[in-house]
Amino acid sequence: MNGAFGAEITGVDLAALDDAAFTALAGILRDRHVLCIRGQAHLSPAQFLGFARRFGTVTPYPFGEPMEGLPEILRIIKEPESRGNFGGVWHTDSPYHEIPPSHTVIMGIDIPESGGDTLVADMTAAYEALPQDVKSRIQGLDGVFTATKVHGSAAAGLELGDVTRVADRTRADQEFRHPLVRVHPETGLPTLYVSACHMSGVAGLPRDAAQPLIDFLAGHVVREEFTARIRWTRGTVVVLDNRCVQHKALNDYPGLRREIHRVQITDGCRPTRRGQETP
Ligand code: SIN
Image 1 (tube, rainbow, N blue to C red):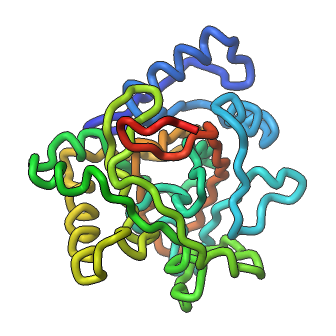
Image 2 (image 1 turned 90 degrees about the vertical axis):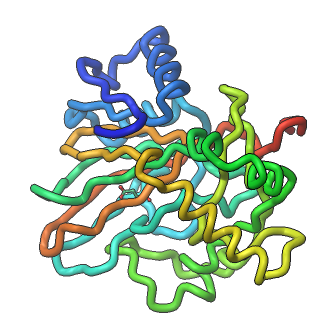
């Protein structure tokens, strides 16, 4: 792992992690936003899931066929002959829920010899660096989040590697509002909550004002100084804090196979702005 934030962890066995060690890892995650834990190839899918569950409650992914026998796990596969990949644009995971996943936990299974890294961007640093007038402008605004452009009626022809989409995707056109500036429930710090591929607008703004604002914020949050890069190996386990991180899976390994396993976790908290009660 390389870049502006995140933490690389070695010398732990996630199948035998006592409570004190888990609390230490959770503390590092709170401060560094991403964990990249090496050397876990010995974990069974059930043990990987058991580790993920320590961060909260598993929230099923509504648009992909899950792993047989372990429906909490999504196998994200790209075969050598496939072109598009899953998660290949900057996004935060699944913000199109009333309570979006707080954490994404991923395990490297089959990793191409070169390529296939995942980029991450720090939404706390990105918010902090905004000009004051932009901070004031967006403070009270809600983004409108939907899966329509990825899985719904506006997603025609979009290839997502070899993740099999579920047949019934009517739910993908539903919209949910979340603050553009949310407060992280553990650090109390403001973070930007923007995911251009999952946004249809900004509540209360006409389209011709909302889209330029989304475009500006989407460009701002992924400036190089806010980013880091994860180089996968088989058995690397990554934990993303989606409340303050965006990510993008690079699609730079034509002719090679890549497989990762993903679990989404919820902390049960709706995104809230400063001063709002957490329900
Ligand atoms: C995703 O969850 O967006 C996929 C991440 C990856 O393939 O690295």
